[in-house]
Image (cartoon, rainbow, N blue to C red; front, side, top):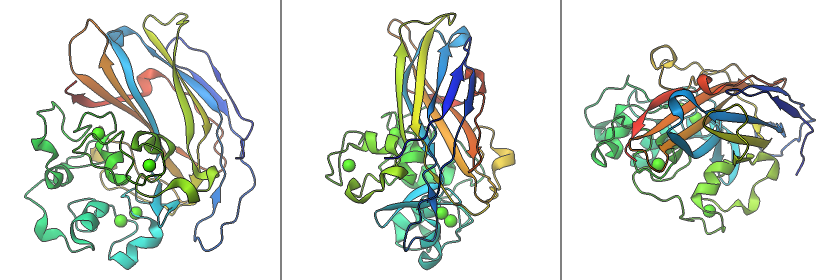
Length: 317
Ligand SMILES: [Ca+2]
Ligand SMILES: [Ca+2]
Ligand SMILES: [Ca+2]
Ligand SMILES: [Ca+2]
C-alpha cells in the first residue's frame, strides 16, 4: 500500500489543523472509466470537547468520501453521492448527476425498492425538501425510520448503532437494524470496519485495491493540554480520491444541517461525522455533528476547529 509523506501540524486550544498534502502519480485502472489516484493524505487533527461540550465523550468518528461507492466489487466514482456509481446510473434508468431522479427518494433507495428507476408509486406522501445529513423525509418515511424511535431529530442515526443513516443507505447497510457487527459478505471484516474503510459491506474485500481504502484511527488523548474537556485525536493515513464530474445539489442553499454535496469536476466531498454521547454521570441525548470539505488532486491541507463542526441534531442515547 502506498503511503505518501504528508504532514499536519496541530496547535490546539480547540482544534487547529494545518496540513500539507502530497499527491502522487496516478495508477491507471483497466476497464474502469475513472482514474483513481492514490491520493494519500497523512496527518492528524485534535478535537477538544470543552466549553459547552465537556459533558460529552466521542462515541464514534467516521470519515467518508461521499463520492466513492461500490460497483461490481470495485470502488468507483459516485458524482451525485446517491449510492449508485456514475457508470451504472444510466443503464438502471437514473440520472448520474441527480440524486433523486424521481424527485423524491435517493436513487439507491429507489433501486432497492423496484430494481430500477420506477419506484414513484411506492413512495409515501412526504416532503422532498427537508434534508438532514443528505437524506430527506421521503427517504425516512420510505424506510420507516421515523417509526423506529422518537428521536428529537429523525434521519441521523435511526438504529442508534453509531453509523449515520446516510452512510448506511449509501453503503447498502440497514439503517433500521443495528448491524454494525454483522459481516454479510463473510470477508471477516465487520460492517462497522467496512464503513470506516469506505468499502462495500456486501462484497468481499478480497478484490479491493488497497489504495482505495480509507485509513484513519481515533484516539482519546490522556494529556489534554489546555483543553478543558476530553481531547481526541484523528490521524488519517490514507484518504482515497476518485475522478468525478461536476455536481450541483439543489438542496445546498436550503439545508444548513446537511453536508454541501456540490462540487466541481475532479473534486470529492469528504465528510467527518462525529457522534457525541454524554459521559458517565451525565444525562441527555447524543448529538451528531458533521464537517464537510472538498478535496482535489492539488489539495494542500486545511484548518479545522471543533467549532467548524455543525450540529445536525440530537438522537436518543
Ligand atoms: Ca450516483
Ligand atoms: Ca443519480
Ligand atoms: Ca445507524
Ligand atoms: Ca464484511
